Image 1 (cartoon, helix red, strand yellow):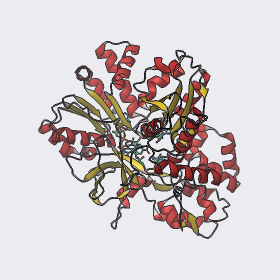
Image 2 (cartoon, protein in one colour):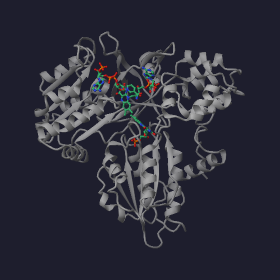
Image 3 (cartoon, rainbow, N blue to C red):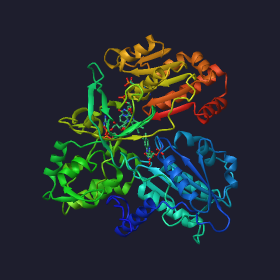
Image 4 (cartoon, helix red, strand yellow):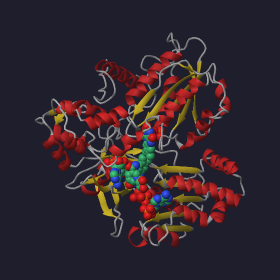
Length: 578
Ligand SMILES: Cc1cc2nc3c(=O)[nH]c(=O)nc-3n(C[C@H](O)[C@H](O)[C@H](O)COP(=O)(O)OP(=O)(O)OC[C@H]3O[C@@H](n4cnc5c(N)ncnc54)[C@H](O)[C@@H]3O)c2cc1C
Ligand SMILES: NC(=O)c1ccc[n+]([C@@H]2O[C@H](COP(=O)([O-])OP(=O)(O)OC[C@H]3O[C@@H](n4cnc5c(N)ncnc54)[C@H](OP(=O)(O)O)[C@@H]3O)[C@@H](O)[C@H]2O)c1
Ligand SMILES: Cc1cc2nc3c(=O)[nH]c(=O)nc-3n(C[C@H](O)[C@H](O)[C@H](O)COP(=O)(O)O)c2cc1C
């Protein structure tokens, strides 16, 4: 008999579903049965995943292991390398995909998604399918890519064998439910299903992980900017004693702690006496402790406003909810936090428990790792842009970046874990030339790449495009980068100071100025990396790359697009953008 796993109270399930899932998950994780329950011909299954930072890929691999324990013939395929000609011949297609950008597919899934949505898509009569859509309801286009796959597969004649499940950030419980559902649908009489609760063959997680973050000692924390408006912190943490390891290209997950003064302001304005409240993972604590450490009191989203409106009676919130207009939601949420609802739209909560029932759990933030483990043994470094802004008359701060910059005092040890990102790796062959475009904090993984290329004595040429507003104040890692130039690690350093002159100069402008040489590097087999702002910079850099392929490669628009799609397919165009 295994003890049920606690399903968080904020998970979108009824108490009965939570109890059932808790038991199922416990069995799922505890069993190490490896004997297939084989009877009859094995069931072919293709698991097709689209992943930007590895979560969908991890789930796809987990499912593969589980299916291998039953009478299935499972195969796993990355959308980036999947041959679409196979589509009509698939028997059972299980799609796991995240959504990125503004409701876009992950980079590796763009081409396949585009083809499937186009008139060139094949008919899929006879293909059984189901979709697990990963996303974050904080984004307006929640799970859009998974929803589009699900709708389109059906429109093309596919047969949905189990309902799509949309994952809101935390995949454990919904993934377990979906896995169970698809396995039952693929094997209606149970003959192919793995032994009850058969689990992936890897041992249960024992070390530090996302669920069990390592309390890391802060070694250094200082501002990399030399004055000026921007504030970018170098955070150096110790991994000693954690047994955590990472590769350059990985990210570090950090659990933030909310500002105690904002929490006190919220509590002072609430219409009830603060009491004990349940925690998202079970257990109880005071409302104050829960709001500081466990619940999200930061940026607003549609879901929380809908729940707030039901308790507030505000005509304005009511009209916002009823109109359900994407632009209106975005306008209202931008620059507002929970404190604005508390102060400006008083609501009727019966007690502390009722209040936290509408809040989501406080989520960790990811940061691209800025160090090579071979250059800084036992340490991990981050390069963090501190989010500070004033809106609606209030000075505000991003939860995690201000925690890292301001609130890691008095021996506070931030809880951290390594988020592996296999899709953002240096080329295996150290002789491959590398082009890196990383303005602002986008420099982070490239400091790590350069350290790694130096420590490992890689002979490949390196070219870095870096940019920030002013050379005098914002040249992050100036000494190190000029050191890399001087010792021959960095062959080219192209610097775009956007505000040192009247006209903006951005990294993509320098790419275009150096287009002939950049094109020559690509023809020499260079890998092209981009890190930093997703909403504007990464799109403009992508456009510049297309332009260079047309101008210097003498390619038509379509051929340039095909060339760049091919770069992606060969994993020579990789992005870590946020
Ligand atoms: C894979 C990955 C790697 C990353 N790497 C890095 C990295 O190396 N360095 C780094 O600094 N960040 C990085 N990030 C971003 C990082 O995870 C956090 O999103 C970032 O630090 C902000 O988090 P926060 O908790 O401080 O802000 P939050 O509390 O999450 O607040 C951010 C929100 O504040 C609001 N906001 C921000 N500015 C304004 C404004 N001017 N006016 C009104 N509202 C505003 C917006 O709603 C915004 O979404 C990465 C993200 C990912 C996914
Ligand atoms: N998801 C999140 O919650 C979150 C949190 C923090 C940061 N971010 C993103 O991460 C980025 C990194 O922040 P950062 O403070 O390190 O630097 P940044 O804001 O990206 O700025 C770095 C440099 O890029 C320039 N730039 C602006 N627009 C550009 C464009 N379209 N193309 C190329 N360069 C452009 C900036 O110039 P000017 O400023 O002079 O125009 C500046 O010189 C932020 O832009 C932000 O979008 C996201
Ligand atoms: C820059 C960025 C943009 C995102 N955009 C969306 C979005 O538009 N819609 C959504 O539902 N989720 C969005 N997400 C959340 C991801 O889909 C979610 O974190 C998912 O678990 C990532 O899975 P992956 O690691 O397999 O890519 C976004 C995440 C990031 C970092």
